[in-house]
Image (cartoon, rainbow, N blue to C red; front, side, top):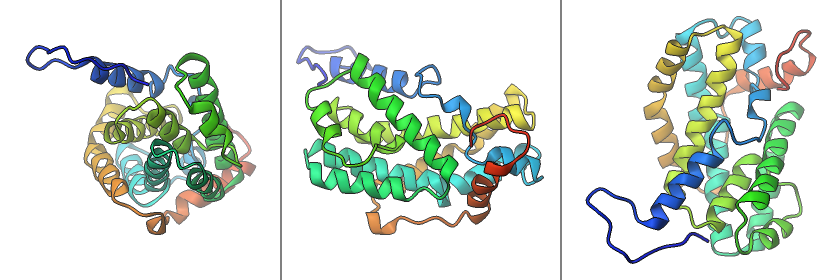
Length: 242
């Protein structure tokens, strides 16, 4: 668990617990944290080959839809519910959430993507950032934890607050999508940052919506993106695993 202190801090400073939470979030959701996110494009590779994504505008529009109406919102909602179940030590509830999240993935390659990253995230977190009760919580789940569920569980067991965890997760998700697209279109570094700026409001809106969403609110309307994930499986020339 995070260490806290009652010692006063200077104006604008962080408490020990706040600093530890921020440090861990920045580490866990950094591109340097070895979960293998660079290997996956979430179907973007097929979308580029098909001509759906050709420049900064079409990329931003595609990612905005994925974020608010597709896998971004669904992953955010699963993270929120997994976090709350792990925080309350409701192992049966968490197991049901993990099973639903694993079943919600629309394609085989996306299943590989999210389960592989979830497994790596849990394994590395336990090896380097272990927390009381984390092993028992993970062991109580009947299915492997997909990536957003894994992040929610680990953050809860380290008492990292939910809202910043969710925002950091979505920022990392969007950043990985943009990184994949920058190698496919190709896209320069400055234009990549412009896409990230354009999605700032969408990330915040998706996070706020997920914080108030029930599992019954889950759903996706990004049919073209789902088809891209399916068709990538038979794409002849590929840089990415999804």
